[in-house]
Image (cartoon, rainbow, N blue to C red; front, side):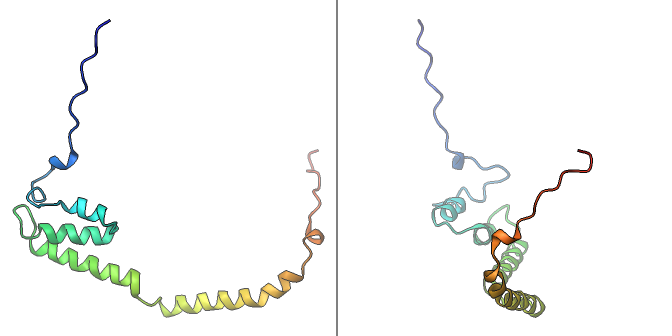
Length: 122
């Protein structure tokens, strides 16, 4: 019986970049930094844009504008107060829940069962 040939050497996907080489010159690539620090999607996008804006293949001002926009989005999602109408609606739901809860606690679930009726076709 012949011995099968050894598998090809494993390649590291970080050794390859598709569509340019604007991340290859860094000591640690943005994707490694983002992943190892568990930064999440929006912070990761910001970091990638800031790392490449002034590199060959980077889009300079457009990368900075996109990073600034993504930072505004992150601030909005993390720290902004809800829209006043939405907050009012949430408060109304919370008040409704508080007023209904005592009533619901008085209901005996056994009294609420619905008896099945046969279908008209049966």
